[in-house]
Length: 490
Image (cartoon, rainbow, N blue to C red; front, side, top):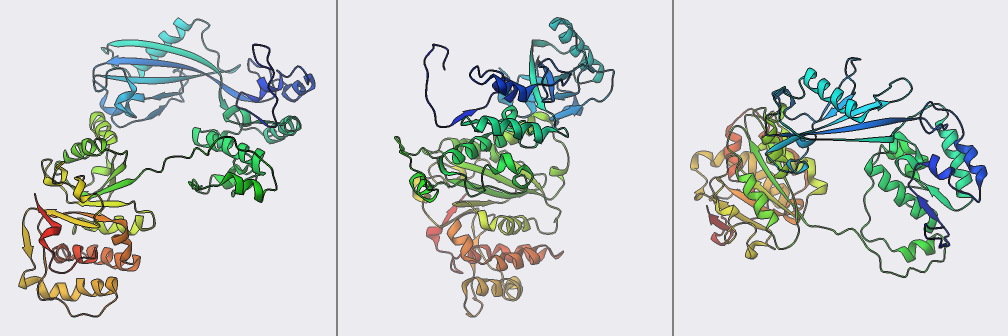
């Protein structure tokens, strides 16, 4: 029954409100309230144990974040002298978390409340004590200009695991299911181990699949019933599911009045680079280029760091910029041959490569033709090509490297191509090359070959990198003498 008095019949009802509230709000079945009866010491006086949380948000003008908070997400405070137990540097997640990006920063403070942890009755006093604690802890500079303070009390902040929890939850669930009601979600299911946003979404998916089809490939409501099993596996989204076929397999009869609405399958580009201390402002240009594409395209920049940049915190603004650029710094200890980062990426991501991968050398010029709208990788004429290379100039394999090339690189090319042709006398490529390659071409070379490339480039001999500078295009399925139509000068 709705607020206006109208009634809507249902075969299955999915509720995401706290199960305590649900059990106490069914006038036709007042006995269900007994499943919530108990004394947990909280304001709701139920048997379901939980943590009440008071949130206090603090907005600060400027970018004067304490150095100790650069790159920090959460800081915990177990000391009794602090009213709060956790502070989140919310603006470190994204510059868009504040009203004026890059000109403000923010903190989100959590204060627990229970019979053992009494908080001030006055909201103003709560705010003041939080601000005093933030200053005393160094989280908030004494001269910080505060532009906003916000607070909210959440009776249900965290579902708390306890010995009798499963007995309480599943007894109430069985009673509700007799009425065709599924209680699911963070506090609908009351299971902390599957209470994050991703879990809560899948609790709903599993519940609907249970209503319609009696379950899905993971089982019957696996997220709710076997959370430990679910937390140890990766569940892929099936873009091609057919609800009519699923119903038929389950022996159910359903009429689906509307067409299926599926998640949109977006194309993805991976940008792969290696980096030491060179400028990576080109990553900003990549962001501009990808956002400007006529169709939405996901992208990631995998930067293999061989000088330790990924092992230390960077200043807050730098890390926020990396987030906007989708730039992931991957620790990579091999300093003898930086290009081993390319091979490492191919080995690690071989089975999940996206439609297109762009291999970029460290220190790419942000004005490079690779990033140009007319001549670069996003230009219309390069949209569907399997391979193209951009570089500073055409380069031919030197005589001094020919023997090493034939000994180390050519056998791998033979293995990739499945032939025994003799080593070519002439090899032509481009210096300082950036290369766009399709997934099809990359996976045409077996994973075993890419593993051998990685092994060779991980050797301490720096000459191996020079040799493979003339072999990448061959491993990507191109002829030894690269045609001019596949090359564009920076």
